[in-house]
Image 1 (spheres, one colour):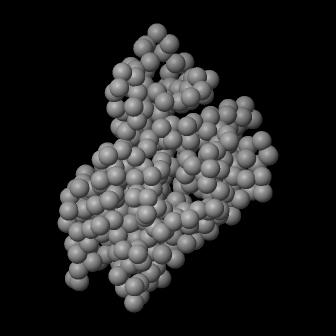
Image 2 (cartoon, one colour):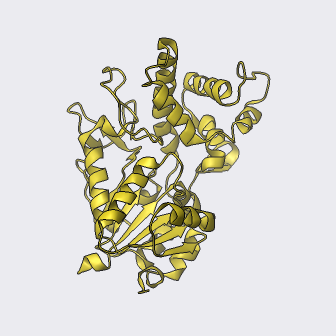
Length: 336
């Protein structure tokens, strides 16, 4: 059966970075797609709204660096550099909790919601800047040739569309669970996508967003604790549309069928507790343990963390996407 050979490939932020994604900025310079260490510097540089940029920057300096106010006399590039150590997932987790915790003052709750909305809206603007190029096309063409088969599934945790826009025209992606999407390669995006929008009926379709893109923020609190007011729109939460919940359910189903789970550029962040619970459920319900493959410069540390947390029989390691692609499918599907 195809299920005995099925591979589910998971793409994290490191996949887009490793494939060579960038955007052009002033004077023809290339700005690589952000990872954890460069997120705030790149994100704030590319924000469209000056008002949102100032709000987010002020919040980060106050709540994560302990400044009374943003150091206005410091040049913007140096200010952004000061924010490098701030963990992205921790920021979103703080905001999601402060907007829901009973002990939060009304003033902080309102402020946290403003920052949350600014982040959710700017995420769409920023990641739309990163598209395909010659290197990303070559990388993912080689991936399709040497690894992907028609019964496999790709899961992307990325908001960007680098993977799908880098595919050959005849092998375009099909966004599973999204209206109006047609293609030959099933692609699940449980964290949403910058090219998705919510319709007036509340469903999700492919198209240029008006306001917020459809995203699920990187926080362990994936669900909205209570009903939001219409103006907040539940942006950034898993509850915002039935399609998002269905995508997570389909991802879990595919994981149960897979022989191998391959994580490319995904580091299992601390805030990824919801996905960790999905993985734990899958492992408990399966008759056999899937092979797990980690493709990451930090593969040794990540694999050690995983084997401590989960009952995994085999974890293979590759240190960059080029090395993994070159190794070919046989490297991950061979028998023990």
